[in-house]
Length: 231
Ligand code: DX5
Ligand code: ZN
Image (tube, rainbow, N blue to C red; front, side, top):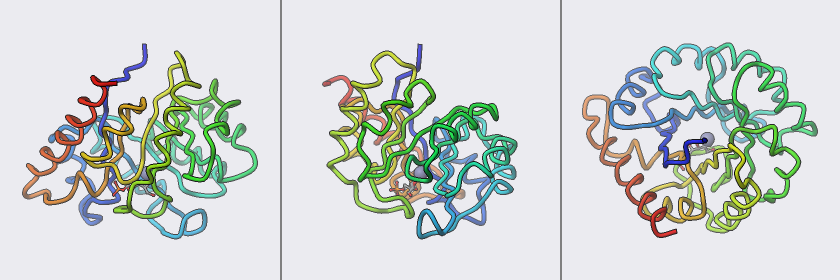
């Protein structure tokens, strides 16, 4: 049975870029369930972050799950490199190219779990013929590219639709963008189980003072679990 309990996945996009190893260790010690790694290419999205070499360098610091979100196009030439870097989950965007079916096959073929991300303008139905090929569907609740953006409420309906489409299949629903204690309940109540949060986890804390990370994670989790009980 798939673990559908609420999982908090801090995005290191909001961490100190000069200190990823320690930041990851701090946030895991403070209760993070997964570590979300945002890879951007300055082409698919208007921002640049890092590539497989950085993923490989941070891998030994991750004890939980390395959740790699590729905001790049093309995807296929880089899949093996991210798998070899130790990604547990590799998520590609349906909008990143004409052959997402092939891309998802290649991700599983490389030994990683396959994630499918949908931009805010992309309908839930775009996942319909891919459900037997994915381990995770990532609903973008901001336009990808930057942390700290405002949650797009229209995406809650998409989460409801995907939850119904997925049924008993072992597929996580991940939410990415603008997740905080106010928005987490909206998507948790609709059926999401993995909540990515960058700014709402890292705000107020640091490697030297990591307690706020823990308080932030607990606040998001508590709000999401409350909505789950009510749903
Ligand atoms: C956006 C990234 C997100 C981002 C979330 O393109 O995919 O993972 O870091 O940041 P917050 O939680 O600050 O919206
Ligand atoms: Zn992301």
